[in-house]
Length: 335
Image 1: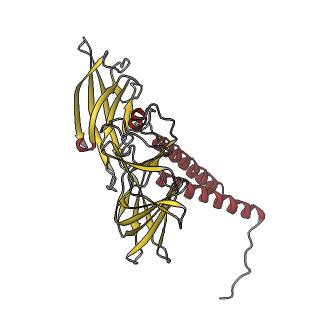
Image 2 (image 1 turned 90 degrees about the vertical axis):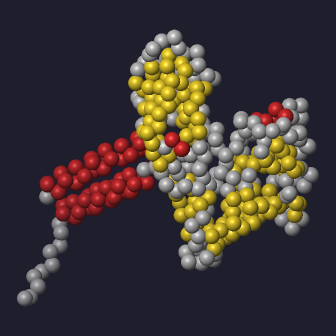
Image 3 (image 1 turned 135 degrees about the vertical axis):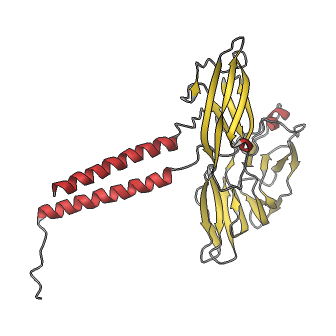
């Protein structure tokens, strides 16, 4: 059968098609945002702080301190092993649920239960219900054609998992401030690489009269590798001293000055906590619970397991997606 003349869409049709393409692209983008916005409510090793204003409380909640309340009961229906302690912080007047550190598990876990606070001298209770997920985002780091592993901007809520891409191993290199780290890694290994430069209180209080310039570098998850890592501390002068914080005490690091690199160089399998000073320091007497170790301190803000930023983003995206779908339907109906 002979083909008829090719139909060329008119300008109105072309405009409508263009609008539909834009709507479709917006729907796809919104759907992708919805998928990437899903994340655990809390990360292991952090402290969840409740100030009494969260909508998960039952009963009137006064200022949360030990003058007003005692902890009557803690009941976990799921996730008991995720929690290290439940306490009242009198300084900030919050209820604190401290989560155990776990820097290897790539699975999200559920924390669900209730905490009862009994009002002092009364038979009234304030009851907090928690239903949240605990875990990290997981990002795969793929060994490239040159055998190297590219590390993106390191995030505090992310675990990094190695994908050897069939090569057996690769060399992972990344920086922590002025310190460069390079190490051989293998398939399916998981690392928490986040670090901070927060001051360690026990070191400062053990050296109250010094005028030393002191810098800090702490790898919160103390990642341990299956091969020896090389750390180069650039920006540290040859006459400065690098200490390591171990079990609450300062010890001189095994780092050696490298004339070739113009830096202090340390060979190690575990990245820990480092204190850099231009003068000799006294060591704290021992363990100090205020030390910034393993990321257990968390932030000072109040976290809400039901109204976190991830949840708000997810709801907003869902509403936007619904709106876009409706717009697409209306547009199709007008055709």
